[in-house]
Length: 124
Image (cartoon, rainbow, N blue to C red; front, side, top):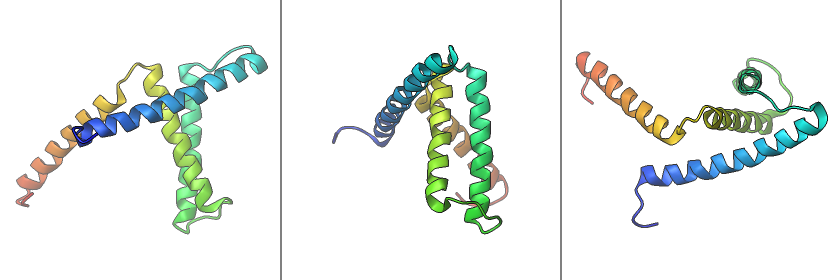
């Protein structure tokens, strides 16, 4: 991998995460078909993600000492991974190339922030 640049390496790593996320997604589909006779819709995945983000918010508050939530650091790590899984699945379900979208968005943010800092007289 000596000839691969950082962006390409990140894309390879992202593909590995996406592949693993899809494996789990497919297992959930099998389980849901067996237990409920249907699979989750894209909207239901989004609602599940919203629930995970709510759980993550509570765990972050606990990590900052603002509330008591059982599970500690392990629960925080688990919920962050759940949220990442949801984003990976939603990207797949909406046919979004997350690697390309991420790099494009970071470039847009980089330019916008640097422009604003320069407009405020700060060197970047």
